[in-house]
Amino acid sequence: MDIKLGSSYTVEANVNKEDTALAQGSGEIEVFATPRLVSIMEKAAVNAVSPYIDEGYTTVGTRIDIKHIAATPIGMKAKAYAELLEVDGKRLVFKVEAFDEVEKIGEGIHERYIVNIDRFLNKAKCKL
Image (cartoon, rainbow, N blue to C red; front, top):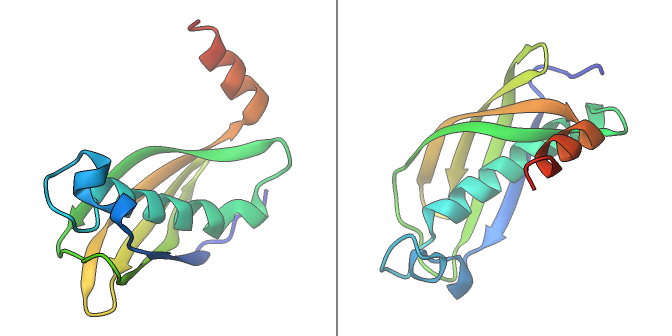
């Protein structure tokens, strides 16, 4: 795998009622939920490196350290950006940021690991 430092990707999402803290169960207000913010940040990271990952492999999220710094109301767009900062063997470290149409709404670091899909699933299934 020839994973390129600096690889990046941006994901855009329309904030709907289903994306709110109230709907996600993470709060009581109808604004963009932190779990949804994390989700689009992770999606951006996955897409930043997926062209470089060999067949039969994928990445899994193992750590996310973010600040959700501003609220986004229903009806606005939210964009998440991920940039690959570090490759350490199978460990990938990304800078993640998110913006709505007015301001930055989140920032942080996200870590993913490259895994063999079959081995990963078999290990998980052993728990059953």
